[in-house]
Each structure stands twice: as structure tokens, then as C-alpha cells.
Length: 432
Image 1 (cartoon, rainbow, N blue to C red):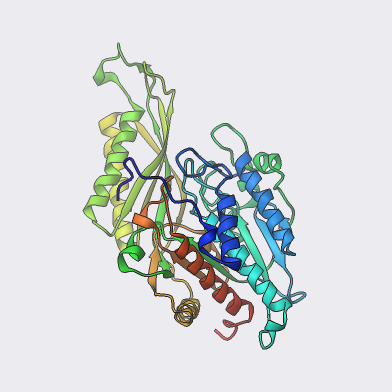
Image 2: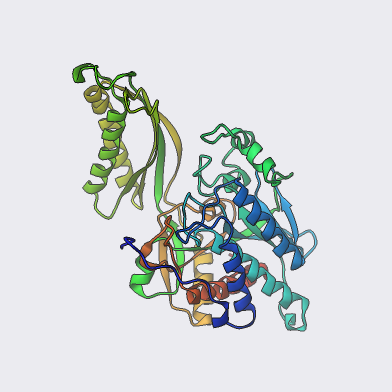
């Protein structure tokens, strides 16, 4: 994979398609303008002005199609289509918030595809074509709040509150680096609502793969059958402030040195389990962050991920063994705060098989894949039967302005999601 001096990304081209497919690509092109960056990506972190702008644009799109738009108490946005009064909902969607200087596709594609799949089904059920197709459930298109976790931690905040995994008041009180709370951010963009959202019967999500396997294997649809396990931690390295020029090396208690040793440790542990363990440190806050002051405190976020829980446990033990060694070597104290973690858990096999049949019926090449990243569907599958789908990512590039998925794959994924959503709405998994 290379992103050095990359060529400009192709713009979404509605003229290459007709009818509803062209409208979808045109809407996606519009969505890409919110928070657009000079490098061809987007920046619309949760609760930011750009996030608020896209949410209100999306609300208009849903209302124009006859959907009721509501926000719940943690800012999850729902477009509701009641087909069967009093029945629960098939919740379908992803997230529209992004990382800083991110790609256009991560999350946002899944929300817009969910909306257009729902629009198509709404037309079917409202027309004569509905003969023999009887909905049993309603449809809720969802834009989950703060999936990315870049501005507010933890990630997947909205779906965690919805599924009862995270306390609402704790989430609302969480602050960003400038001290702005989630509650304040949602209020500032007019997206703090009421209630707990619609009652779910099933869920579905489509997303870009964010990896290379599908492109390598030449498949158009990935049917996700399991997630990797992950342990995410916040470490606080405590040192002692002193002068970088006059304090002799032996007397220093350098928090940044200790943090750097943790960063290296994470990579060294990953190298012990090639291909089976991913580790990263993606966030550092250094205090006082002055060029002439030895750092007295560093906050960092570190994660370990694996599909093998025994490997994850062994890596975790190695990490914590090294923590005590680093404390002695760098003369610092390391405080660990557990962020959040999740085990390896499968998606319901009945949903996997339903998706495979749908792909076969549509003539789309497909295969089973695992998700290494966390997604809102990994929360939802612990609440209701959930189907997770992927479309390919060019070169596996993600969380990068040059993240790219071909328009043809976006449209194929939309057709796939429409088929799956229709089956769920019509009760295909009721007997499972």
C-alpha cells in the first residue's frame, strides 16, 4: 500500500448509472462536500459544525422520502418508516462522523446506502409491486453518534448507549480536549433529542472493508461472520517536570520517555505474533509539551486486537509485565485506566446464511470475512440478530484522505443491502 504523492481520487460519477443508482451516487457526491478537506477527504468529528451540517442535510433527505426524523438522548439520528403500526424496527445504518482528515467512505457510505435501500423498499411496499411482499417490521435508518471516538472517547458511543453497554449520563458528561462535553456539543448542533430510540427486532450495517482481503480475493460482497477481540487502555505516565538543559540525565523522571517505551513495547509484542495480533498507540497528550521542560505527564491510548483470545491474553500479560519494567527503567509511575474491551463473538449464523443467499441470488461474488475494526453492528449483534456486510477498499487504505471504493462496488453493496433489508423486514429470520 502506498499513499506517497497519490493521484487525485476520482469524483463520484452519477452519469455512469441510471435511475435510483444515479440518484444514490449524486447524493453521495453531495455528502462528500460536508467537511471536505483539500486532500480529497473529510473532517467532521462528532458534534462538530460539519457533523451538524451533514446531519441536518440528511434529515431533509429522509423527510423528503416520507420518513420521520428523530434524535435520541445521545444524539443517534433515526429516520423512521412505519409500515406495521406497533411493530418493532429493523435498524439499518452506520455512522457519519469521521476521524480528523479522514476518507469519504468510512461509515458515511453505510448510512446513505441504508437510506437509499429503505427508500427503494418504501416505494415497493407503497406500490402494486408489493403483491406477495408483506412487511412484518418497520424500518429505522440510523446514523449512530460518535462511532469513531476521535473527539470523545470511547468509540461506538451512540450504539453503546442504545444497547445499554454505556451509561447515558456518563456519555453525556464526557469531554473533549477543549473541555466541551458531549451534551454541549450535541446541543450546539441541534441534535440532542429525547427518548431511547426505536425498539429493534433486527439490525444490518454495510461498510467499507478497511482492509485488503476482499480486493485480493476478488469478491464484491464480504459477509462478516465474526469480529476480532480487542483490549483498549488509557495509560497515564507520571514523571517529574524539570529543565531539559540543566537537569542531568540520571536525575530525570521523563514521562515522555516512559510513554515512548510503551509505544515500542506495543510494536514489539505485535512482532511476536505476526499476522495474529495488531497493536497501536494512536493518541498521545504530553504535558506541559514545552521544548525546554521534561514532560511530567503523558496520556496515551493503546490497544491490542486479535481473532485468537489466547493470543490476546498472552499479549496482554506481556504488556503489563513490561509496564513494571518501564517504570523502573524510566523512573516513572504508570497508571492504567481500562478503556473498553470486547471478546471474539460471531454474528448470528442465520443472518450470515441469509446474506450469502441474497448475494447468490443477485449474482454478486461474495465470501465470509471477519472485521478487525469495531463497528456499531458489533454492539447491535449482542442485542438482536444482526447482518454485517462489507464492500472492498482499494489497497486497504482507511482513516486516510485517499480511502477509496469504486462507484460500481458502492452500487453493488446498495443492491445487496436492499435485498437483505427486505428479507429482514419481511420476517425471513423469524423462525431462526
